[in-house]
Image 1 (tube, rainbow, N blue to C red):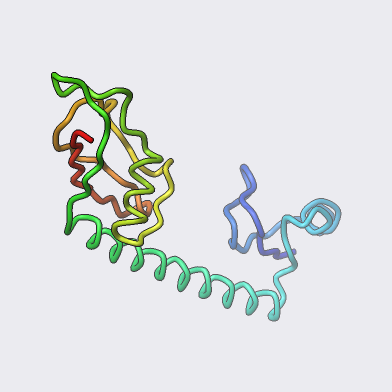
Image 2: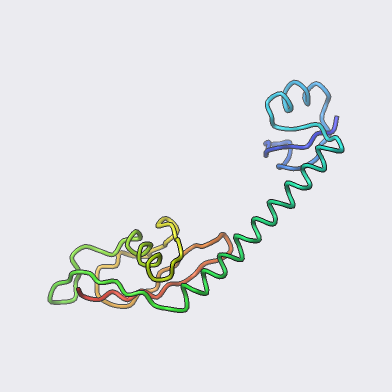
Length: 148
């Protein structure tokens, strides 16, 4: 029996693949557990439409990430932090603070877990911070830390 896989199954196939399996295995295991559907014309058409929709959504996310990259890389963000006499700060700049600064400055929402700080920012100065906007798009933010 031909079935369309609804999820990745180890040693059997990837999601949306059409595979040939025995009738019993298809009915009693794959279809019963919701891992596959029978490869009928209507199910194949539904799969085709679903894949086309997912591709469209992914393209929109990619385009949005490219737009956000242009916005983020075009300007510099300045953060004020308390510091001592020698330029050493009290504490460090966190990803949460950077995320909030991006939101207020550029009106772009960036999750703090997507901000990659190589080493703790504990001094006054200019830093480059990498931000993962999409699995294929990474922006570099210019961050200026100044004394409050």
